[in-house]
Image (spheres, one colour):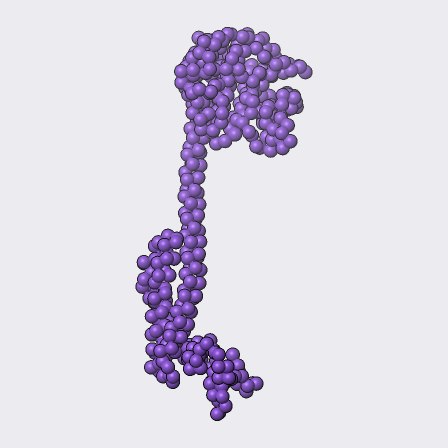
Length: 415
């Protein structure tokens, strides 16, 4: 906009008409498409953006803009229920259908107000039409910009609220699941023996480490008499809730069938038939069951597809490889009694595969060699020390990241 006391700038009067008796410059062009009066009125109508040299119509321009803007804004606010609840593109269609006449009517009101306050010299119709055109264009441009920004903001805020609600709902569900898993863990822990029964000449120590809150490993120790104690270690296929449910089923069946009168072979046969009628397709159980006798120093057992126990005798390691098939698949599978003579200083190690198959970052498994090395390192300190060392070493080896449930029973024979 030209500033006062600067170089002279042509005014619309000088450009379009006469000034101080001299012909206007556009009069010299007789082929102009518009008459001088028409063009002058158009220029004055667009006075919102034009300025006269040293006397810009600032007040009238401000008044015009405020009236158009406030009228349009207030009218659209009243009409907002008509388009604000609609989805794209209907919201835009209704909004534009309202914006155009509202902007035009607001421009008409502004023009009439200017006419009443300031008056106008010359053809009023063309001047009013020009003002209405400018005001309507201003309303359209401003209204579209504001609505686009507002619509985008509203969508982002709605999406943000939705995400926050989903996060909160997810957090609530996660807390509920964690609480349920903690309850399930406590229930499952109560299915295992709280205290390990002991009999003379033997030390028995056990450990249970589920890969998740609950797992499918099961161990039990039952004292039949001061002379005999039964040992059971089982591994249900799978992990998590499904394995834990099957483990509970196994525990109930084992406690129902196990007694001093039922030897390991027949017991495995009973468990197998019970599981075959109760578990789903593709599920199975590996189980090792044995009975220690402290008078005869014998161990009567049967292995139903479980990891082979290790017998440490002197500096030697013996693998007890004999056994039958897994439980829960073949209802007519046969199992038998097996036995081994024990001696003072012997150490029996029973594990689930979660111990020997625990892997480090290089995907190298803990294996039987490390297992026996851990046991030999504290062999003279008793079953509890051997169990603790093995569990510490395997946990350190896999950095506490067990991929499967890990359980362990250590039995030592006193001298």
